[in-house]
Image (cartoon, rainbow, N blue to C red):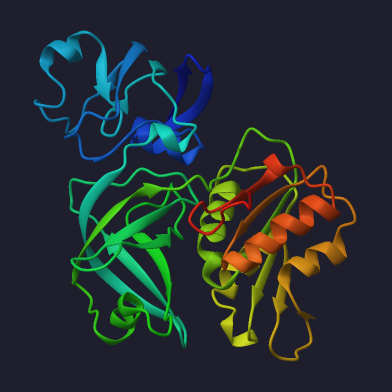
Length: 333
């Protein structure tokens, strides 16, 4: 059995199963309501039930008082519908609307993706979740030295663990620690979400993703999110690496291809039976006119900078249709 939920003032509607919370169903259908702990304790997801009734679940008294319940308020992270509902809630559409937090986390799992790329899966405390937009990044805070920035590779609907792809950079103290000293259950401190690299869902333009190396991580986050919400836009994914062995998670990429994403791997430093050279050049070779496209680029600064310069100057890409990680790309003045 399911019920229908209508959000005001947006008038968005979506179904919710009897055993689903309002927040779970909203996120499942691509509507980002505010939240934080997802445990009925912080009040960030509080909204008003204008019509219908709910089971308040495990909402804690200090986050939702009896007087607030009587006034129609509910915590959407734990409220479940007892009927069709009309609710009043803000919907998050930009990174400025999400609270940046500093949190401890535990290294839950470490998976070696290639000889020099490690996937870290981080678990937050039981009463915390990190709300973010797919494609954003977090900082790892170190006791000594500058913070280290890593894009989130998991999509926003899949936030139980935070997934990072860490390349072992020669001379990098943190990345060397990841490969040589870090252990599962180690404790880290993070700050996030950060950055303005995320999917602009209101645009009708077909999308070209351009990634180099572990720039794959935020692209993975965005594509997973886009497919999850049923985005009906043409999508191309160009991934540039040095060696064929640098391509990882290809089973995931095959899943995307089966759903219509066109994948072009590009290898720069060895011969193989696919495309070779620079990844941005492969895009230039395939598209004579980018004026109607949106480009999302992430990876080494030299790659992103070259893509921005060449696509805008030679293929007519509007400057405001080029999106990139803020920490990897600063336009030349």
